[in-house]
Amino acid sequence: MRILVRAPNWLGDAILSLPAVRAVRKHADQLIIMAKPPVVDLYHGLADRILDARWPLRAAIKNIQECAPDSVLLFQNSFYSALVPRLAGCRDIWGYDTYGRKFLLSRAVKPPRDIYSDHQIYYHWRLATSLGLAQGEPQLSLQISDVAVLDGTCPWIGMSPGAKYGEAKRWPATSYVRLGMALAARGYRIALFGSGTEMQACQSIAEAIGVAAQNLAGRTTVPQLIAGVSQCSLLVTNDSGPLHIASALRVPVVAIFGSTEPRSTGPFGTHSIVLRRDLPCSPCHLRACPIDHRCMTRIHPEEVLDAVIRLSRVTSLEH
Image: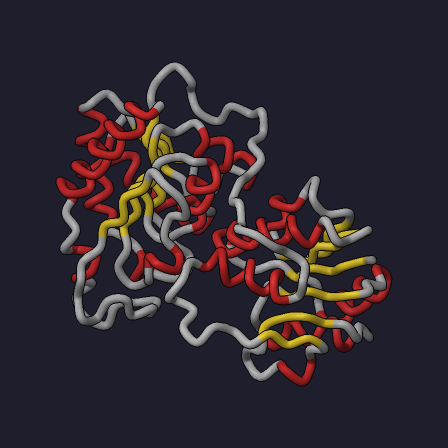
């Protein structure tokens, strides 16, 4: 059976869908992944064929028709992601009943009432289980390339100061600078991770921290990003893709949350500390804060440093 999987667009979401995609792989004679760069890099070695989801509509339809999938499984929730395979002539299309697309689906699964009440990894996993394609508990993991991104002769703390969804998810750059300087004084080197759009912001943070910091934002492929995070003793991060990379690699995480819900998109597994403020306006799930960003500005660098030290002690004792 040829199964076409439409992957999520965001790096973090795509990582959290991997356990479900791997389960689907076991049921497919041929697995076709349709995804946008750069998340396509996650599927090399897993998919038999990869289609670029950025193609114009006519090209996307043509490429799906050439693959002739028996079934299409949508881990992307949009109306458009269901429309494209339907226009390509696919009759067996599975996915959540979201965004008014039920009439396009042959097997529509009702989504949970509150998508923020449980971790997002289960959102994807339960879609696969409800269709008989997975069972048991999801196991989150990633393959690490052999490429060494960081100097292996010194200890590294990773930082992910960005967040693609919007500035409301970002702990202030000045706070990352103060934290980085405190960690550098303790003998750590600081690796800053992020996308190309975050390169300049990360460069400013690195320059303010000093020679102990190295800016890798916008300078790594996804496999190189995974390799770099794997070399860190710990990652300090906003709600971002690198957070889920660290969780999948069992790298300890100090996660800073404000506008989003850590029950849904926080670290998955052990060896993590989530820092947030219990405020009436949080989580708001907005891209930009309409007031004073108090959910983030009230989390102080000294508090984050204390969490890094506590988590470092625990993990070093266990390892």
